[in-house]
Length: 110
Image 1 (cartoon, rainbow, N blue to C red):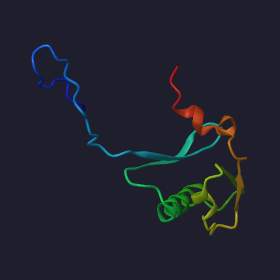
Image 2 (cartoon, helix red, strand yellow):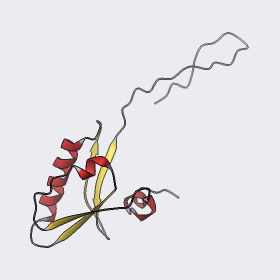
Image 3 (cartoon, helix red, strand yellow):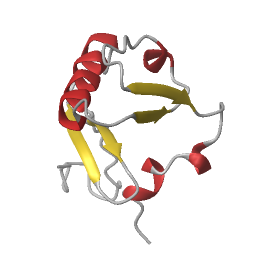
Image 4 (cartoon, rainbow, N blue to C red):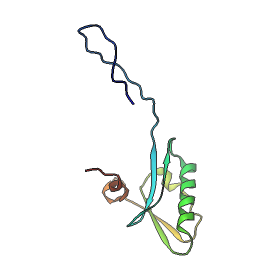
């Protein structure tokens, strides 16, 4: 929330400096062609440890019965993931190709 009022001398338009008080929230998301498989909101900086925990949870949700391919952005922390499941492969999108990423369309508002 931002303040919607401020004090200033008469005849002078108030121009307050507003400092953000809320933290950013990152959404990490695993989707297939039909559904969101698993999502998580993180209110801190996303690092390799948090992302590895997220991938481990996605692997747990998917199970070990079928073969899966995870397609990820070409971000540095995605390359540090250690895949512990034998039934999952990782493929990376080419750099600078958000139009190939279905996650970009999920939260699109028209």
